[in-house]
Every structure is written in structure tokens, then in C-alpha cells.
Image 1 (spheres, rainbow, N blue to C red):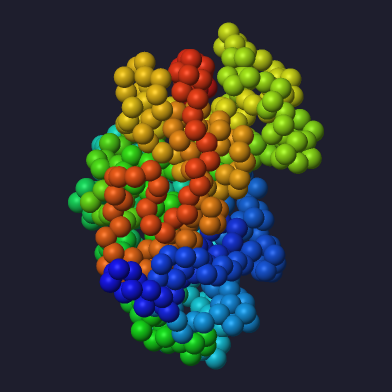
Image 2 (cartoon, rainbow, N blue to C red; image 1 turned 90 degrees about the vertical axis):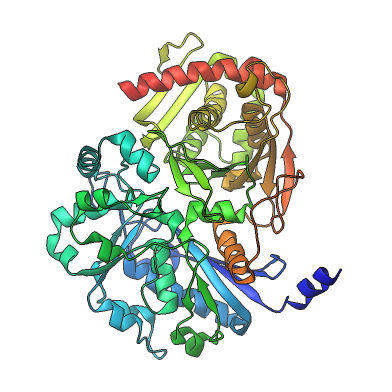
Length: 552
């Protein structure tokens, strides 16, 4: 009880988690018991229409591969967010620490005058008015960009091949990964590159705004650049040299994700009333932050269903493949997390919903009742945008004999898009070496549920039929995060508190409930027979068909 009293006495402190995501800047606030107390959000398109973005993105290049976001839009959003919090009398003085995250891979290019301006911010003026001339590249390349295929091939060629790049950096060369974006800028806009004093990720850029100086890149988000050696935790010189000159200097030294990178800048204490002793903890990528926000334990799988779908889990040993990614773990620098990312997430789900004539999700989900699990052996693979896992594009429909067909009946389409997306996730997870303890993958014939848990977050996580489908495909119990569907900003707040308190939050391996702070609801139990008899054979077919498409 003494510990409990001590915990109760600390509850006047608050902890903020910011999330600079694609479409919005969001903040979650938790107290010392990790209870959510406040949340605020600024939508870029709505609150900052002058930047003319669509979904927070500048896609005006017309080539279908180049995507950026105006760096200044993110700067402006931070002041607007804090102004909104102030108008609702948010108690800034109680905030003991802030951390957060940014959309992964995106990069910010500070020019040679930026450092001086950052360290002398005047609280009388806005951030945007002071920082507007501080970026050598005004449009930040973001994760949706796939214009750097030539740079990817060059990196792999210079560094001993795709598998060597994957083994060293956690991933083969990917178009959206920051090193390849930097290489493109170095080649195509050399003067802008030379004018750059510091390159930040969106995450470390967010932290830099808060401390009034350049904040370091953290290990976990740094693992999404094709530049960091995930075993030695230092920049891989060969990769740096393959991308650009003088890159080590421009990146600065990477740090563990729980590092306190500084106190909050006087700009915020004077303008908003933050306490001068408020600490800023290194920001990380949105996917690593979600791992923290979901309080993952070893052997857990987390699935986030959003614009892009992601699947991530905690692993002890890095076994990178040519598909998927391995990052340094954001809550335990000696462990890793594996990530599979799918560009085609809610896009195909929404498109099929419209195609089958359903106004609402409820209607669409009811269509599932017209088909049996396994969809009679029909398989649909929906890549409206060029997919990265695997690298392929197009809508591919197959009948039970694996012959290509033009269309499906409406009710078959509804099930096909959902089952196809989930089966792909299971298959790729297995390839990355995820052991599903006690599942059929381990023994080949087990019909009991796996002891792994699947934790689901994101928009579609509110849907019971989808949750049941996940349970059956993965043969695992499914839990949803009930406090908030936005685990990334919550992860920032948890990490802020954990770093300050020195809490050991490596997950305990006991018990069925996820760790402290997360409020999970058990949402679905698997039908193991269905998994073994229907989904396993169907997934073997799916795997063959996917390989066929990828090879075309």
C-alpha cells in the first residue's frame, strides 16, 4: 500500500504525447497513473487551408509517386494546438514531461540560420513567423513518396545487395526510407542540400521545436532510414557514403528512445505557461510509439487498421527479411520490433464498400453474413496503390481453382477484401519468423488457440465482425484498446512519464491482460477449427497467388 500511496501523491503531474501524423497534429494527456485526462487535435486540411493539402499531403506533382507536406504547416499547427488548449484552460504548468512521435520516414531540412533562430524564439511572435525562412527544402518528403527507386537500387548496389542492407539496417532499401530521400535531394537539389545544417525526421523535428534547438534522432525511428546499423546502434558509414557527403554531421548522433533531450524552450513557458523544468523526451516514429501506446508484451502482435494498415510486434532477435522491417524497440533498446506496412489499408475497404453500393459500414458488414468464412475459396487481392508488401499493383480476383476472374458477386467482394488483407498479414508475419506459440504454424496440426494475443487499434477496430475474422485467421484471442483508438499519441504520453519516472516497462510475460496503463477489452476468441480447416489451406493458396502477382 505504501507504493500505492506514493503513486496517489504524484498525480498532480501531467504528461503529454504529441503525434505529428499525416492528416493531423494530435495530443493526448495522461496523469501519473497513465489515465487519459485530455485530448486535442488540429486537422491540417481544415485548420490550415492556406497550405492547400489533401489529407495533410501535397500531391500536386501529378506523377503519382511524389508526395510531400509543407514543413511550415506542421510548425504552424503546433501554435494553433497550444492556443486551442489554452482557450480551454489546459493546466500547462502541471506538465512534467512531453514526448511524442511523427509519421515515419518523413524528413525536415533545417538551413544554416535555423539553429540560431530556434535558440532565440520570441514568445511575442508565432513559431511560423520566426521559422518561415529556416528550411532549405520547404516541402518535406513523406512516407507516401515512392519516387526514389533509382536511389534504392544504387544504395543496395553500393552496400553489398538488398539482403545485406536489410541485415544491417533492418530493411532492404525502400523508396520512402529517409536515406533514399536524402540521396535524391543530394542528386537533384545539391545547392539546397549544401545549405542544410541539420536533417531531422518528423519526430526529432517535433522535439526540436519544443526544446528550441536540434533534437537528436532516436534509435527506433532512426531504424526507418536505411542508414542506422540496428545491432551497433550507430550510423552505417557505407550507407551514409552511398547517399550523400557529410551526412553524419547533418544527422547528428542517434540516441536511445527514452533519452531526455532537453527542457522545454522559454518560448512555451512565457507564451503558454509551461513549467521551465518540463522535460522533453526524444520523439520517435508513429509505429514505434504505437507499440509503446499499446503496452505490447513479448509474443504479442498489434494490428493498426487505418489509411495504411500496419502489423507490429515485439521480438528479441532481429531476423530481417527482404519484406517487412525490423526496428530497434522504442521501450527496450536491447530488443527489436518488427513491422509490416501496407499502403492499401482503408482505401480498398472503402472502395469495395462503395462499389457494392453500401452507404454505411454497418450495411457493408451485414453483407458478410451472406458468405461463409473462407468465401467458398474465392480470393481477392486489392492493391489500388502500388503496394510495398509485396511490390505490386492492381486488383486481382481468383476463383476457387486459382483462375483469374474479372469480377465477384457483391457479397463475395465484401468478404474477399477483408479476408485477403488479413491473410496477407498472417502469412508475412510468419515469414519474418514470428513464432505463434501453440498455433498450427508451430506444430503443423494444433487446433488450440495460440497463446499470442492480437491487439487491434485504428478506425476499423470498432467493428466486431472484423475482430472475429482477425481472431479466426490468426488463431489468437483479440483485444482492442478501449481508451482511444489513437495509440501513437498515447504512446508518447506513456513514454514521457516512463522516462521521467524511470519505470521499468518491459512487459511481464504473465497474465492475460496487457500491461499497466492500457485499457484493453477482450473482443473475440478464435474458432481454432476454422483456422486449421479453412484458413490455413486458403492461406497457402493466397501465398502462391501473391507470389505470382509480385513476379509479373
